Length: 180
Image 1 (cartoon, rainbow, N blue to C red):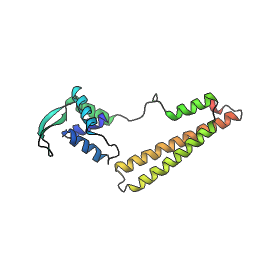
Image 2: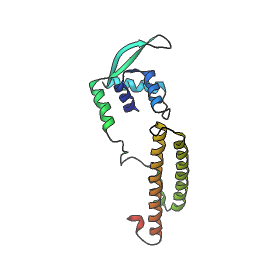
Image 3: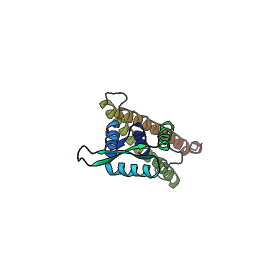
Image 4: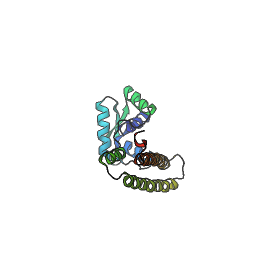
């Protein structure tokens, strides 16, 4: 979230409340944040020299002055670097499903039952994402984009489960499928 907020401040100077509202509006409330979380993030960005107070302006609700933040040159560079950097999960990131399957295999657990349970959950999640996708009329809305990515991610998990299921079946039949 830090990088997304920095990017929004680089796009246009904003007060913390405006930043929160803009983020939630642009993401169609798919990623709600509380104002305290946004405020702490902006404070860290300021501490790190990525944003500064551009000016103060009266809060429309209270009339009290609020700080409007903008990016510094290093903040601009960081926002642009975030935008131009791939968002691929690190290969070293812990994957709960891989852990579950690995531990089930290594402990002699019931792998087919685990695979069946996971596959059923994946198919159910795909159905839910398809319903969410059908509610989005704009092809580029945050709701539609999120649903589409979720479907693609879940389809990849389903294919991986099929691979594990086939490899395990070969292994159980005396082949070397599980180690290939």
